[in-house]
Every structure is written in C-alpha cells, then in structure tokens.
Image 1 (tube, rainbow, N blue to C red):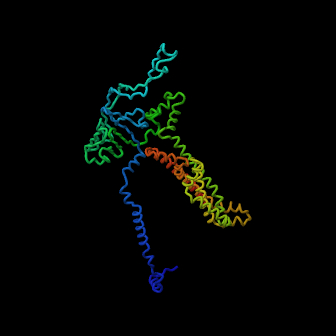
Image 2: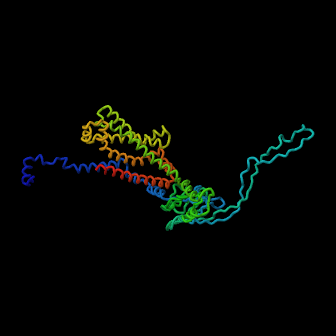
Length: 504
C-alpha cells in the first residue's frame, strides 16, 4: 500500500478540514482529567481532615506499639514504707521467674527488726471456767449460764518481725540512662540531664521547672512519667516507683518460668535431654521438655497451633463445599446451557443474595445460630463463596466456544455427554484456578471472621489484642498466619500454573 506524500495529505486536509480538526474535548481532555484528580484530592484532604489528623497523631505511642511486638518488659516496683525503707516487687508472672535477680538492678539490702501492731481480734477463744454448784442453786446448775462459752476480748497484739528491706537501688535503663531510687526520692540521669524528684507519700515534686522533654507531669503533685524510647519508661508516684525496662525479643518463648528447663542454656538443656538423670521419674526428659514447650503458659503453643489448624481446615472445607455446590448451579444460571429464563433468573438471584451479604455478617448470623466455633466459620465461607463462585462460573460458561459443543452434539450424543465433553474441558482449568484462588483468600478471611466467634486463630488473636499488653503474642500469631498464607499462595500458584499449562 503506497504511502501518501505530505503534499497530498495537505490537499486532503484542505478539502476536508472537519476530519482533521481536533475537538475542544480532545485538546483539553488530559489537563481536565489532571485538574479533576487534583481537586478531588484536595476535597478528600479537607473532608477527612487529614492535616489535623496527622498533626494530632501521637507518633510516639505508635512507635511504642510497634516496639511491643518485638520486645518484652520487666517491671520492678519500689514501694516506700513510712519508716524510710523500701520493698522491691515484681508482677506475679514476671518474665524473670519467681526469684528475679537481674544484673541491671543493684540494691543495697539491710535486715531490720520491726515491731508491728496487729489488729485486735473480734473475739478471742478464751474458755470460761466451769464452777461447781453451790448449796442454794439447783443441782447441776452452773455459774454464768452454759459452760464452755468464750469471752470476747479486744486487746491488740504486738508482734516483732525481722525482715530484709532495701535502702538504696539503682536501675540501668541504658548506656547513658539510670534511675537511682532512695526512700522518699528518685534521681534520674538521662544523657547530660539530671532530674531529682521528691516523694512525700502524698505528692510528687521535681527540682526542675520546666521538666525535661523526656518527663511529663499533668498537674502539680501528680505522678511524673519519664520515657526513654525503646529502653523503657518509669512512673514516679507519691509512694511508689514503677520501672518498665524493655528488652528486644520474645521472653520465655520455649520454656516458661515454671518449667525445670527455664533459665538453662541450650547446651544444658541438650545434655539433660540426651544423658541427664530423669527430672520426672514417670517420663523421659525429652518427653518432659516437649510437654513444657507445648503447654507453655505464656505462649500456649499447642493451643495456638490447634487454632491455626482450625482456621486452615475451616477455609478448606468451606471452599470445597462452595465449589461443589456452585458448579452444578452455574449450569442452571448460564443462558446458553439452560435455555429457561425462570431457571436462569432464580439461580442468578440466589447467587446475588449469597454474595451480597458480607462474609463477616454471615459469620455473626451463624455464630448466633450454631454458637461459637469452626462450624459457623465454615458456613459463612460456604454461603459467600457459593454466590461468588456461582456468578464467576456461570459467566465463564456463557463465554465458551460453541463449536466444540456443537461438534459433540452432531454425533448424536445425549445432552449430559455434550456438557461433559463439549463444555467441561473448556472451563475446568478456569474453575479450578478460581477455586484455588478463593481457597488461598479464604485462609486470610477465616482469620477475620474468627475474631467474631467463628473459631480458629482469629478469636485467639482478638483476645490477645483485647488485653492491650500481649502484643508479642499478637506478633507471634501474625507471623504464623503470614507463613500459612505464603505457603498456600505458593501451592495455589503452582497448581494454577500446572492447570493452565495443560491447556496449551
């Protein structure tokens, strides 16, 4: 085909200018689209007050939450006594166990003898004396009425105790940060700054006004909070100093504080398992160690893994059932397969109803119907995916090549054989690929619906988040969920590639 010369094109343009003239829309289309996008972005910024939200956001709090995912805290508390001594206490479930003695906390201890006045007993058990009957009383009578009764007393008792108390303590929060705690006062050194705080049992006051940037006090006399970033923070109250020292990692992930293997090195644990004497005479050390890992009270490995398996099974069973039901219904919904308008419309409306209700709403409904558990989750996945897969399958059937079906029909094959050999081979790889994708997606969805009571790891994840303190447990479960999703994604992609490759 010969190309037109430039002069010939100019002649054609001169004779037919309306063909080559650009419309106003074609000239200004791109600038208008860009302007509309910019105006829409400005509107969204104003409507959702994005600037105000970013300005008022507590970014330090967000950083603390992220740090909680990959760290743990040790929380010693220093409680002041009126006699000028202190006691160090740890929470009941401290990561350091029942007898904590960390190297970053040094304390000066003394033994003191105290005289403690105990509250008076409501009634002491002093037996009344039984006296003999006199001549003017009836035989068998006793003085004071019934014999053996108790006489109430209200005398207070004084007890002498010998106790070990703390007179001075120092906590190293970091290389350049330390907190010195003494009866009635605390000295905090952070970098080149020093803050001295006085506690009189009723109020708290500091020697610096204003306070350093790392210290806050809402109102005079109230507690002072000092924060040192990832290293931790502390609260100084009128009669107590609470330390929160942070460490990177997950504490007691293998053995909890009640395990006989707690605090031992990996080499010591291995030697105990391999050739050490039995800790429990009824079982081997290997069995005991494995039992301690599974039933770790802080991490609950066995329960978490069981709930994760429930989530996987819930997603798998729900997807398989939805695929088996959606497959035959899709043939009824496809107009080129079932030429019945009523059947097509009823089936398509059923699909619309099932998929229009979100999976989370179905999960709430079935949780009320069946109670909390995996059955509610499987039912929610089954209902939602039946509607979605049915719609996708019916649309795939309506777009098949009729030549293959007509070829099978031309040899006199019955209708079911026409569908089996003329339709199914065309759509089966697509059907299987979509089912595999939904199986992978439902593994993630099952976690969300589990949070509303539908069973699986979602409910356990929600319980850990509700405490607002077990964020390392949340991170542990999130990592397990990610691993499962990555594995299933790889399996699903591999199977889909093989299925699609067979059709080439």
